[in-house]
Length: 437
Ligand code: NAD
Image (cartoon, rainbow, N blue to C red; front, side, top):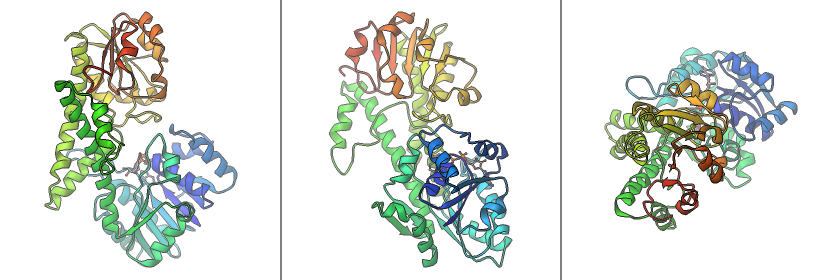
């Protein structure tokens, strides 16, 4: 099949490369000409494990193309995916649909033959109706159908997620569209990935409901962690104790500094607004947002308390800046709020991240950066693990204790055990594990 991918960001590039890997002919278009130019030079503009290989193999095989010219991508396409950003709108937090509608207007002119326009971007309920209206307004003669095909991949494991999804959701209004999209994903359901066929509006809602539920689950265990700290219980054991119940499940029950990233914060905010607009308030989602917002600054207060209540003039090494491991994405990372709050309290901060430093420089307030975890730790009074990159899981604690000036070790991801760390003279603080562990 011929596929056009509009938007070559995290979702568009990964989806485009993987669809090419299934054997389709995929042409990616992006308004960011530099992005397309670097992709044409075989440079991958984002850090995503395994993506460079899938892109290179499919370009070489003549199945994956990058273009500055939209018409080139759309004219022969059977399916045009819209995978542009839907960030929070300034001011009211609703999803900013400017890019989606602009993409629809651009696509309309180049459609030829029966084409399905499928939205992969996360969009509010009813957006497909408006995309449909725009396409018909711009090109009344076009034989086009609009579908919703929300994407569930996670940055850091995006290739694996795309190729082995828990499910594929297809929201369409007619059989011809359903059949065409089923054909796109045929290699996957031959591997047993369930296809969920539904209406466009339901598909749009599924995506928000999924993200809101996951954000709520994280926020729930974070509140339980606070209660553990007051009561002497251990949140990891609570998580295991409840997660073994099949109705709850063990995933997304790791207490930490609060959720961040390019999706959960903006999607929960947009979902809450959607609920209000439809006069069906989503109070659990609204509360999740509020609890999570407070949590990030609370994590900075935890660091200050660990340092004896005062960090003025103290040097704090922050390990892990991206919102999660295996990505260079800094969008809404908890580190942004934590670092700012530490600076507000008078600390001197030095940051290290295996892949996020370049992105961090434009997002974080001015701090020092180190190029290894050990360099960051030099002369530090306190070390804080904010993101659980693998390389932080087996730090040479002996070396760290020699390099650091102070003994405070704050593990906001619970990746160490107290006795392992305290053996080297550190005072150890984690999340929801006040005594043991
Ligand atoms: P991104 O910012 O990485 O990429 C978006 C791309 O779209 C950019 O390269 C931008 O230049 C391009 N673009 C903007 N307007 C365009 C236009 N009119 N025509 C062509 N290209 C245009 O965003 P992303 O993280 O890939 O997210 C895209 C969508 O997918 C969002 O709605 C997001 O919520 C959703 N999503 C993201 C993830 C994730 O993990 N990042 C997962 C699932 C769903």
